[in-house]
Length: 315
Image 1: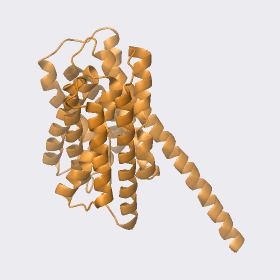
Image 2 (image 1 turned 90 degrees about the horizontal axis):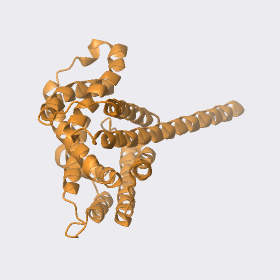
Image 3 (image 1 turned 120 degrees about the vertical axis):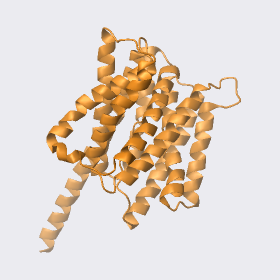
């Protein structure tokens, strides 16, 4: 009996190890997909305004999300939370427009790194709106993260770029969206949230796009279609990774999007990464890693809301 028990434990340990490596691989793929989406946005910006790119990203993202609807059937769209979805998507589309504008006009690594300040704002908003208890060490991590943001933005310095405030606004609004997802996740299925969000974002993003409309041509069609594909694929990899592994491990791995973006931006656009961005990114990474670790510790002691993430990020 003891031999069988030891064998079962060994088998369970190997299975857990394989599942963990699958989760890590999925999160790395998610980071690569979101990094690729940022590059597609920048490539498309040579011809299109950021608002129009956002519309096409959502349009093609809906096309790539339709298999979810075919898999589940129309029944997955049944809900009594339409008002929550609409409010969430209105805030989310403004966040997306700000984020895309920052990606187009800032160095890619800087824009993406600032977007990773979202978890800092989520911690604050969770206290205000969800009644979550945050103790001194997590508050210290939040403060450290904001120091990292200031290091990157450098307000008051000659190198300060006001567009970094647009990127920061996107992060704040994304945090509000994350809180709304925590509320929706109490009763709604993850794939239902993806479908409702994508369907509402298409008409919402069309309105601002019409004011700057210039029909895409040639390679730009490929860039915007690829942005939709990479964004949808990134979310799917992200949600499946979190299903297989703990957020405390996977959240720091998701930060690999920053070096991915930095490398691609250097290769394709000749962008260099400043020392300020590197230092700020390291500080934000450390703060996010600690916050994710503490959230996992809390979750292991009590039942909490289901967690669905990034676009920005993401996720």
